[in-house]
Structures are given as structure tokens and as C-alpha cells.
Length: 293
Length: 167
Image (tube, rainbow over all chains, first blue to last red; front, top):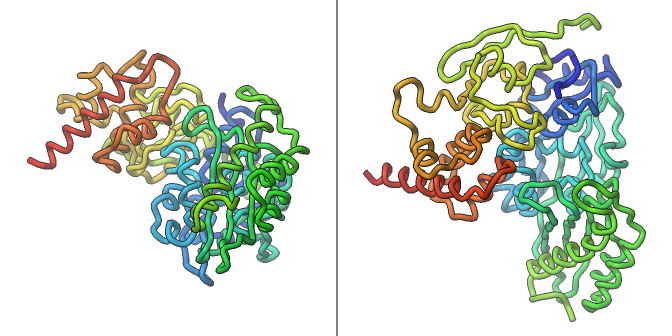
């Protein structure tokens, strides 16, 4: 189908974009890479009187090293992140996650800010943002603010941001010595949306123990979720069997939805396995062999 | 801007080396603009939701789904469609020739998107492994038959380009 009619705006500065969002409020939507928004508009699942294209705002793009981490402009395209040397070196999970997003033609347009703002439950970047303790920079005509990624996501396709607010950047702390990351997801075909996925970080301390674990499940709830019981099990050096039990407890309350490709029950069964695979890989990468027995 | 603000804009793009300018409704996709305004119907529209890849074109050199770009977004850009690869009388590109030699066509509806995608893919991955080829083609997999001819075509085109470089 064709999208319903809208008025297109192409601001060249952030200030102009914010003014347009302020002026039109609920009736306006920011257009980033358009790889999720345009299909929703084509389906008429979404309709807006005004589309504010961010594609001509140079200041929203770019990757900077800052405070030992990376500040990534919201308009930075996925294809840039996929091949950037600093991203691979400082935040390798971002590189890995990017390769799981759609297909290369999608990544040629899609942006990191657009992905976060769209808040698809199956979005890799949302889960990575939680697993890395990333923060999100937000701007409106009233000023700027910073919030933890965990405070950004509300429910499926819905964030805590006001209609007049725009994500301008994401800041991701660099991996530290002893950190191990992994992201795994189950899809029926390459590039499909994940049926269930997990992003994991663990830190191997000097004494060989693990700390600061993040186990984030995605595509199994309205928003990415930290599986805290599994994190605690990892931090306390639980044996593999106890870890599996902790994962089961952590996912027991999930009620993933049925859809055309998988039942909710199936997603709930596989998330534990996908998370376990991601944990094992992250632990391995953190050094010192496999999961502690 | 007022509520009565215009819902169309002047768009000027270069398509296959030729300049096109027109007043285009804001909601018109680049795919529809290419087919209807530029009368370049080689770009096919399959799903109109970014899934099938049949409408893939090169936008400033990058392979993109033209159904997920509004024509107004492409203002000032340079676009290559399937018609631009071997214009009237020019020899087929290595990719086109390889698709022909290996019958990498299937029903043919998806072919323009495949060929454009493979042109971009091989430019960025001149010596792909079979796994890379399959990943590179994954964004165009449609719904008929097994893609073996297409995979063989990509292998041949990669080998032909490698030979070209060695010469």
C-alpha cells in the first residue's frame, strides 16, 4: 500500500528539526533511515501530518571517542557502524549486533538513533544499549537531557520520550579488560526479525571470578529485559546447572506473543537456550575458559 | 509552516546519468517515482514494505530498497537502476552476463533487484566465500525455487572480476 499524505520537511539543523517537532507535536514524526517507519506507514499502521526528515542534519552523524567510550550520533547509519574500526575495538558487541540487523541494503539506510526510537521489541541495538549500560542523549526546544537506556524503553514500539523530543546520540562505555560480550538470536532466515535473542556482558575480575553481568533478553517481551536472576547467578559463580535454573526462573514470567512465525510458547522455550549460548560465549571471551563448573 | 503547507516538492535527481526534475507528492516513494515519473519500469515493486528487495537501486552508490525511500529524500542524489548498468548497446556487465550464463533468473520478477544488489555486493566483497554470497543475497530472497543458479552467477561474476583485475 501507499502511505497516507503528509507534509515533508527537510531541516538542515537540529534546531530547525526540534522547532518543527515542537510546532506539530503528535502530528509530526521524525524520519531517520525509514527502514521501519516507512513500512509502518505503507501498511497505514502509522500516519502523520508531518514528516521531519533528519537525513540532511550533518551534526547528527558521526562517531567520537569520549571518556574512554564512544559517542555515536543518532543519525549514524548502521553500515558505518558495521565497518568502523573504533566501534570494533571499543564496543565490539555493537559491530556484532549490527551484522544481525536486516540485510546490507537495510543497514545502508537504517540509523542507530532511529532503531532506538522505534523501540521494536526485537531490535538488537536496544538490547545492546542495556547490556553495555549505554546512555541516550535527548534534545527538545526546552534543552537537552541524558537518560539511561533502561529508562528509554516503555513497551512495544513505545519509548518514554515526549513527541517533541529527539534522540541525538548514544554514549556507549568502552569494553574494559576482562569484559566478554556476546549477542545471539534465533531467526528462521538470515536477516529476519529475531524470534528470541539475548545480549550478554560479563567481567572477569583479577581473581578469576565474574562480576557486573548483564543478561538482556529481547524479542520475547514488549521491551528488552534484564534477566536479573541469571545475572546474579553469574556474579555469584553459580555452577552451570544452577545457572540454567536461574535462567528458567528469570524467564518464567515472560508471556511472549504469538505471531505468524512462532507461538509465544515456542519463544519462551527457546529464550533460555539462546541466553545460555550467549552467556557461554561471553564468558569464554572474558577469558579463562568456559562457564565455571 | 502552516497546516496548508505544500504536500509536494520539486525533486531533481540524476538517474543513470540523466537528470530528471519534477514536482513530486511528498508521500511518493522513490520506487514509484522511478517507474511513473522517469518511466524506468525495470525496477520492480514486489511487497512495497521493504521485505522482498525487488525494488533495490543504487542511491549514491549504496544499494537500497527504493520503496523505503521517499522521492523527496533523494533530491540531489544520483541513482542507478537496472536500466543504467548496460545502456543501449553497451556490453552486459560481468554480473548481468553471469546471471544469463547460469540462468540466475527463476521467475524473473526479482531479477533487477538481485542484479543491482550483487553489483554492490561484489564491489564491496570482491572475493566472497559461499557463506558471504548467501548472506549477500539474503535481502533479495523472494519465494520461488532454490537460488542455485543465482549463487553460481555470483561466483562466476566474482571470478570474472578477479580475472579482469589480474589482466
